[in-house]
Length: 378
Image 1 (cartoon, rainbow, N blue to C red):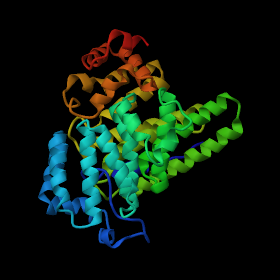
Image 2 (image 1 turned 60 degrees about the horizontal axis):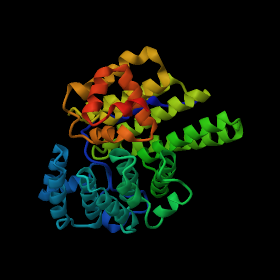
Image 3 (image 1 turned 60 degrees about the vertical axis):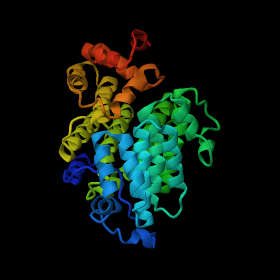
Image 4 (image 1 turned 180 degrees about the vertical axis):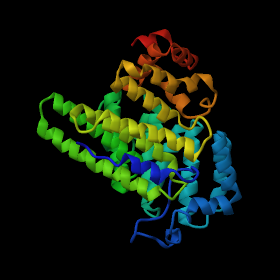
């Protein structure tokens, strides 16, 4: 049986406020003079910039408010006030994040690649930059040719798509798995590790269906290794409010992995739901602003729809209701994601269509995002 320390995760992550994305302190023995002085989760480039660089602080405020174009302009002004490479990398990363959120996907991906390729920056920011290349695809459009084309150009990214068909979801999914694996090769961040673990779990399912039990055991071993990396990165970031923004998503993906492994008897659905609830609770505790839990809310509902059966329909409706009874999600990235799923060849589209049959009000909400009758019937 697959063992997890689900209860520990909540205790580790309850305190503090959410900031944005990462600690920029190098692992022991790899510090450069520019980053060595950032020696704890309390003393980080982000903290320094928010207190000493007024343009950065303004950009951060605008980003939180959803004014992404204005935030990008403020962060670009802040770049001139960066006093070392660690601060420079943090500001450049925030510029790229703002660009993606404002719809400049190609520009954001190019900036992420530049950050990742800069050997003067430490491994955390470089790994986050690569991870964000893949996240741009999954958040803003699974079939957006601009995002896909910009991703798989240049070294090493072009090689990730050499043997796949990028016109299919399966082909793109495999290529983007390799992007996340590339991020892991730089530093094993929780989100990348959880994403790859989920893919490996699904590979184990396919091998089981083919009768390759030796292959199943090999992939289950890979899943265990990736999930250990998820837990380790959660521990790394437990005292850093700036890094915890991505932790609920990683926990949710870990839960989805366990729900997949439950089909092989390597976990239980109860194990998975413990993590789904933790991910939701962490959003509410770390930052109570409504709307920030959109992806976790969708994934929890979709997992209930896919794995738990008809007796959970009432819970699915309860999870979906805030999308259409509140406008809190309108400015968050979950909304363009749901819109983009309208004509996507993904399991997410299928799950959304299935849930719209369970909850007619949710179907009406998706229609307001541009879904047409034919999109629900596929």
